[in-house]
Image (cartoon, rainbow, N blue to C red; front, side, top):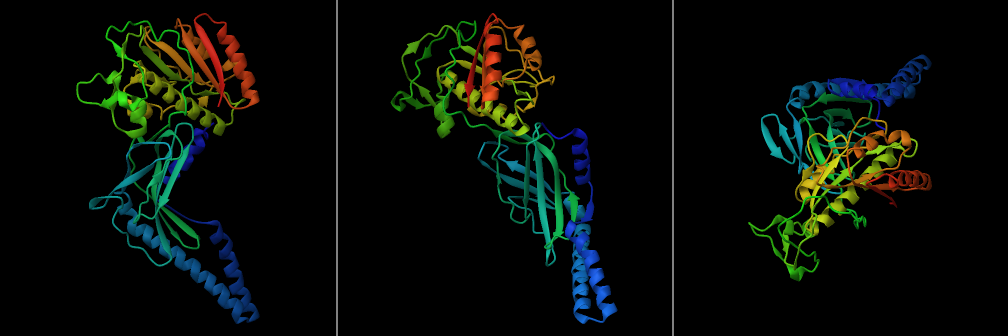
Amino acid sequence: MPESAESKKVEISGRRRFFIRPCFSACFLSPLSAGLFALGLLRGELALTLTGAAFAAALLYSFAGVLFLALLHRKKALSFTAAFVPRLLQRGGQAGLIFSGPGKTTVGRPRRLFSLPGILLRYEVHLETKDGRIIRHIFDPSTAPPLDAALRGAYYGLYDILSVSDVPGFFIAGLPCKQEEGERLLVSPLPGAEPFPVPSRSGGERERVDPSWVRTDDLTDHRPYVSGDDPRRINWKLYGHGGELFVREGEREPPPRSRMALLIDSAVEKELFSAEAGRRMVDRCCEYALALALDWKDKGIEVSLGYSGQSGGLCSGGFETLAALLAHPAAQAASGEEKLPHPPEDEGVVIFLLPRNYSGLRLLDEFLSRRKTAELIFLYEDERQKEAAGLCVRRYGQRGGCRAYSFRV
């Protein structure tokens, strides 16, 4: 799973203060240049002497240039901040940057900083999720290219620095910069291709007294949403693809139940999943949960979402709200203490989770002890995980009020 807290603390603390250090090439070249220079003087060979002197001059210029620019920009770096726009985007999207620099704020890039020939200035943004995914965005501060968000997650600031280095890579200096607190970037999942065919037994116990509308994917039975329309008639699938709101105009039907809760249990059994595989499979849980939520909303069912370790109550709303929530689930050890939120008793419950050994099911058992009914969907990707998923399905299939399924993804 993620790196140890102690090693991470040491790394971060080293980036929060000014530092300058030689790189491996400088440590190798310094004694080499001194040796060549001394050998050339002893043997009276001009070529060796000039070679050693050239290497020494390059090292001296690199060190002096890096040190000079680091001291020159040290106070300016403290006034730089970088914010991502938009803060919420879908996996595979791009986020631009807004810089706040000394004296003024500009969109896309700060003002150009003074430099020297052969000396590079780079702005570095380092972000991390709770389960150890890291984004390093390193760029020339005068250009500020957009950031590609390839992996889902809620990214927090690890550290921001303005680095000063020479072209050969002999020396590097780091100037700490301010950074935003809390979540700096939310990368939501893309919905799975098809929702799982989970036959929810009732959708909760609360009767819905108002009529709903038959599901249809025919655009001729849709019209643009206008203020005052019932939001439960919105076709969220169309919104997820096109970004525009349409409402269904179908025949009326009265479904007896209409409230469902979708939960993500992000506990990962380390004996079955590597750290990377665990993060990838939690991504799959989020993708298929989002697809199922959109499918239910398209049928007029009220949907709420939650995940293990969530603070506050369950979340409900439109596509953007649900997608933003599903950026937060992070892979965690199955023996952890991150509990699932408890939906109201009048809501049906479907839980997406990964197979694990019986020792890692304690928190799930505790959750189910307070529920009358629940649907469990175990996702796996290889034969070993399939066997563990089968054991979990058999265990919970015999439990009163539970139904369990396993799917390969």
